[in-house]
Amino acid sequence: MKKFLYYPNLEPPNTEWLKFSILYLDKFESIVPYERQHLVSDDYTRLSNETDLVEMYSPHPDQGERASLKAIEEANKYLNEPYRRSFLFNRINVQRDWRNQDNWNYQIYSEKFSFHFGEYCEDHGIGQRNGEGLLLPKELAFLFMTHLAKEISHERNGAIITDNVEFDNYSNFSRVHDPRIRTRLKFMKGIVNLLVPANLSEIPFDRLIQFRNQNREQIQAFNRQIDLIEESIGNGITEREFIESFNAIYSELTREIVLMGIGLASIPLASYVLINNPEALTAEYSKEILGALGIAIGGTYAVKRALFDTRDRRSCKKYLTNIERLK
Image (cartoon, rainbow, N blue to C red; front, side, top):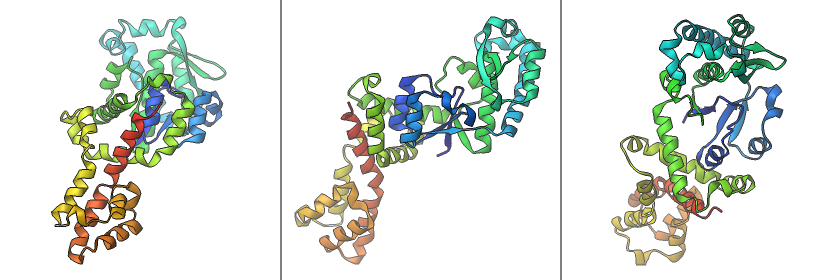
């Protein structure tokens, strides 16, 4: 799976989006220059320090230079053809709105853009430099941050994610998002939404951090299972069907054993307990199970395959169960 890069803000301003991410995302980065890391919230800092979910990525000067060049080229099109393009930002005349100083309320920090971009914005009356960097209208800032995110993700073979839906029209036009990833994340959020018994907004960050750290391996297994059914997600499998598919995991392993001609009655209780425990799937315990069952060499491979093929599925089932208990 590619690295996820969040944009356009230093951190997600939507607390609910962030809380869901704690429960299903493997990890993601946000664009935060080293000199600005003190500006993020206490909760975000805690996530960075106490979990492996969040990393802050400081852009390189050449990434900012390339993003600045592309932003200048694209901004020219909006200034020269405002009526043809303004609809992409849900506006009638972007040029007029950008030149209204009352709309210059979004701060782009100096570590993100080139001198030429700041000069361009001032020369065209669509922004103003200050001690922190550059004040821009929100749409132009989003345009620039889109190009910066694309430069970073392209260079690092990543994928872009955001909680911003206001400018979806522009994002789709710019081919910012991979539709498969958006569908995947929506699907995973839907699963969590079905299982969490309480209103997620009422669960404190402390509890979510503790839960994530206690279930780290299960979250990874959950993501790997989503990888396996990614095509099915695109073809219409529902979140409920995914959850229900894990109800039969234990019986499937039992069926594998039965198909080998081993009656359940002949399986020692200790071995059956090990089989039904995800921790039993280590190499050491697998040997113990196989030895306890007295399986001939010819059947060893089939049982090993059944055990190892279901390890992630068992971990995923355990994680879905744990989410249901979260409160």
